[in-house]
Image 1 (cartoon, one colour):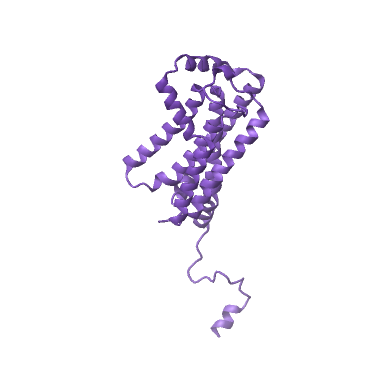
Image 2: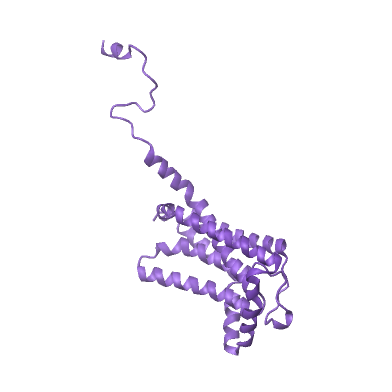
Length: 250
């Protein structure tokens, strides 16, 4: 099995992926501006957070704690390490590099983003979990979107049955949504923190996927567009000297 089974597929999808990346970039830019100015979409934060706090139950709290644990740094690091080890063991080193680079990059983006924006978390009285870092973007949301997303990209196409592929995609989506939603439910993030985490994580997956597949796609495209030499032509020969044909035939 090839270690790069999806290059052609994603190569053909470059225009669509580029369009999505542009939209995500625009959304992140607008949302970050709203956060800094405390206007726009930030108006939804107190309403949604308040509604979530009012509808807490013991069962939902237990589920939220499990979901948030699945998206923390330790769990995502373990998942990334296990997937990378499995890919390397199967001989897919480039795919393992892709997964590892995406995970590490997500952690860096979270660290830098929090310090650039410097947004405070929701009031302590509303929290069901302890968090000491800054709020924007949600690291759980960004990390789960990036790590689970890139793992899905690397592994789902290798599943043979369509039903299995669809089930894996749905499971990945549910996990990412559950992790982000749990952060709002537990009162440790504003909803816009989670939206930003999802958007930045998705954009980072597209960037990493593009960097991974583009060189091979470009080489194949160049090869297809290069005209084949004519029959009998010497591909490495230079221009023939005048009279060379006569000399050869004499």
